[in-house]
Amino acid sequence: MHMGNWQEHRRYTNFKELQMKIMVGYKRVVDYNVRIQVKPDGSGVVTDGVKLSANPFDDIALEEALRLREKGVADEVIVVAIGPADLTAHLRNGLAMGANRAIHVVTTDAVQPLTAARVFLKLVEKEQPGLVILGKQAIDDDANQTGQMLAALWDRPQATFAGKVEIADGKATVTREVDAGLEVIEAELPAVITTDLRLNEPRFIKLPDIMKAKAKPIDTIEFASLGVEAHDHLKTTHYAPPAKRSKGVMVKDAAELVAALKQKGLL
Amino acid sequence: MSKILIIAEHLGGKLNSATARAVSAAIAVKPETIDVLVLSDAPDAIAAEAARIEGVSKVLTVGRAENAHPLAAVLAPQIAKAAAGYSHVFAPSTTFGKDLAPRVAALLGVAQVSDVMNVEASHTFKRPIYAGNAIITVEANPAHTVVATIRTASWPAAATGAGSAPIEPLSIEATLPNHTRFVELQQGSSDRPDLQSASKVVSGGRGVGSKENFDIIYTFADKIGAAVGASRAAVDAGYCPNEMQVGQTGKIIAPELYMAIGISGAIQHLTGIKDAGTIVAINKDGEAPIFEVADFGLVGDLFKLIPELEQAL
Ligand SMILES: Cc1cc2nc3c(=O)[nH]c(=O)nc-3n(C[C@H](O)[C@H](O)[C@H](O)COP(=O)(O)OP(=O)(O)OC[C@H]3O[C@@H](n4cnc5c(N)ncnc54)[C@H](O)[C@@H]3O)c2cc1C
Ligand SMILES: Cc1cc2nc3c(=O)[nH]c(=O)nc-3n(C[C@H](O)[C@H](O)[C@H](O)COP(=O)(O)OP(=O)(O)OC[C@H]3O[C@@H](n4cnc5c(N)ncnc54)[C@H](O)[C@@H]3O)c2cc1C
Image 1: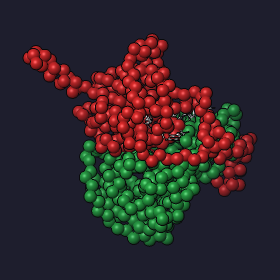
Image 2 (image 1 turned 120 degrees about the horizontal axis):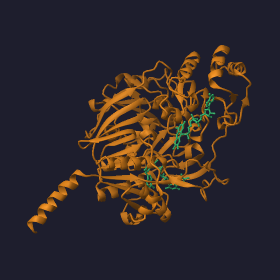
Image 3 (image 1 turned 30 degrees about the vertical axis):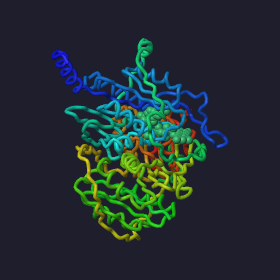
Image 4 (image 1 turned 90 degrees about the vertical axis):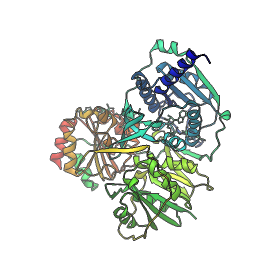
């Protein structure tokens, strides 16, 4: 190898070492404004024709990754979605928001959290990100599992329910929203972070960015080609609407309300 | 026959009542044994509390300095080892259990059932999806350990007092990582009842208007001995701290009395109070969706109505 080239190569690798990739989960779900209906025969929920959007927690994950890139902490943000072939337009939104590139793992099967985590692990092994940011939960299945499972399989730290993230000296200092208040932990990188609602407010996508996103690459990977071992899925056998609360009564004033509550033994 | 291991939740040397709720769910499985596992740097006092819960067969303790704080990366490998021989591992569906249980499930290579609200059979459970807008029945494979989190609002706490389960220290060979470190817990200090277990809760929303105005909610709550909650909008606006948020992404609660004041009743909020006994709504907008689920509704300005309520007490 020519000497100059070699030195240039060295410098390049050193430079690369300072930089970091961030991988972001970007799941498409039924929009949070849709009031979901259970099919009368209990076989599922009605999803035909309903509005689909990015999981709100994943928008927050992407926003956080973009801010870290803008701060110079990372140099590349990759959005990942696991799902059917028609996810391309959804991934373009993530690219328009600012991700550098996208990975689409194509499967028509519903993917449960352990399988999603195993898919992410395969991608992590290939891409070697310094940080993986996922939503704390997807608002369809509300499982709240995937990030923790990925961290376990990867044998790396997890910082779930993040309300604040700071990256310095090869570690993440994360403020977590827990039942007792705010918990601060330190996690050595690489690590998995899952987002809570107050981490940030995601930016809006601008029209010119949608045009620009068309030129950004989307890697398409067949689920079967990843060699992810199948696990025992939970079988969903029935869907039911929740027990309905019946509409109560309107009271005319404070005195009537207090009397009613006292009568029920509540005050 | 089923054997159930319940992961105890505790803070500051005290057992969290969510643990006794998980015991109720375990009892519904009709198992042969229900053991409680206490991981702590000083487990004895916590274990003594757990031993008094009715239905508990045995309390196992792992006392290690590394267990001083509930870090999932540290606790999960120990629980995965302790799980050998058990058919089920349960944790409460609190931020503690939600953080920890999936890490255990992944180490065991099994799926997790989140937010169990009903036990149909030893491997069949009901759980909510879509912010509680649908309830699904799920079946787990009986050939594997079931890891599940228990939706605490769906289960009463198992009675405490009469039980006297034996306490046994457990030694677990597990190398624990040090890549994750606890720094601090910032806790709002409050003498008010705990939001998650209180029998009465008064919550304020965006309608309260400011952090200062929130005093009217605190004062009223204190008068009736209630815990204080909030909508996401109120927390986002900085009127009150995050741990007060009630709803899909906050706390799921089931008090006997819930009073929603200046809260519109978005589905994400309502999912947190579905199991409340009596819901009272106070809102100046008679069309607010909260009135669709309220047992008692009162239309008007909260700043006028709350003092009137205090008077009428
Ligand atoms: C009505 C309904 C029916 C279902 N039926 C079945 C079924 O029959 N069989 C079956 O196997 N599963 C089924 N599922 C599971 C479903 O497909 C969920 O996606 C799966 O359980 C994962 O749960 P979650 O997304 O809530 O995970 P969570 O752990 O809540 O997700 C957390 C985060 O992980 C990341 N993530 C998770 N999944 C993806 C993804 N696909 N792409 C990109 N990022 C992701 C995101 O960042 C997300 O914010 C069903 C779900 C629903 C709502
Ligand atoms: C993914 C996701 C998760 C979410 N999770 C949660 C959650 O966990 N918890 C939650 O609460 N929300 C959650 N939300 C937000 C939710 O959708 C609503 O935005 C929120 O609950 C609204 O709060 P609010 O009712 O206080 O405010 P608003 O909807 O603004 O309602 C304020 C109400 O106050 C009334 N009001 C105003 N002034 C007065 C007065 N002087 N006297 C009497 N009444 C008055 C108004 O008529 C109005 O009805 C979530 C949203 C998303 C997208």
